[in-house]
Length: 437
Image (spheres, helix red, strand yellow):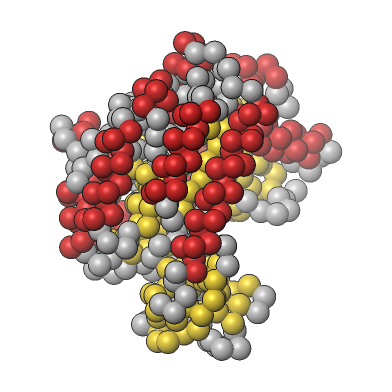
């Protein structure tokens, strides 16, 4: 056990990661040594930043807490602290079920955590953080919470209503990160297309991205977690005007059949969804769309699922994730619908959907062979330097591999022009045509 040392373990999404980064900075201002996601934690204090979104994420959080509780019982840990979405939602239940945990905190109780650790919370540094990502990219969280209240989703229960950060505050954060060497920004929110409605009375995502794009030193901006209903079309014009706004959009659609969309309370229908995809692809040629789809929601019929398959065949999403519905207590669906699709049927549908997407992904990857694409180098691994194109977000999308023997002296954060020579389902293989910085 290392004294005055804290290990922080972050579970769940990149929004949680930003929270951890801000907490790390506050702890370091108070003289603590902090490690993040260490393979072999050695600190006397461990803080688990939990996820409570769906069943699998909750199980992962509980398992991590139990693993650290065992370390504590063996005398390898002095204090175990739990924070984040899971404890925000189930605070009282967790206190009873996990007595090994010394303190539980909600998602936004950073100031109390610092105070209880005998430190001082520095409000003037509340937006500063220590990056845990490679130094050339960062996640940029522009708001908290969500106002959408989809039938299946527990996020509004956990995080509350949308609270947007001001444009001035966000731009200042971008400028600060650029000064530290960040070139690429993954713009994230629970639902970014509603950004600004609480502060400015209207959607302000397009003006915000325009302002970020104008900051000197910002090379790439990538947009995550858009919502299809009332999509702000002016955002597409910003993409067209600014080369540093990547032709990439992460927009969760969930389903396509009218009955399912209505039951999910998505406030959009089948035809509107088709029209939206057509408009996005027409206005921003070459854009790569990432979406998330759900199977097995209450009432989903074979005909509904066939509609979903036909939609995926038509849309040819460059990136797609999918999951089977799991009932979350407290949600509209849990209180009003019967979970009437069997687990076996859910898994069969999920497998069929992902097999279809695998074929589409292979076609998309192969279509890039012979092209020259701008790429950024993330790291070296074995015999390769690993990078990404503007169409690839960290952690979740395909990568570009460069043989070290063909591409010596590359460094993380370096941009190159990559000639794509080969491809498989997951990765592109390329050689350097030109180094751009």
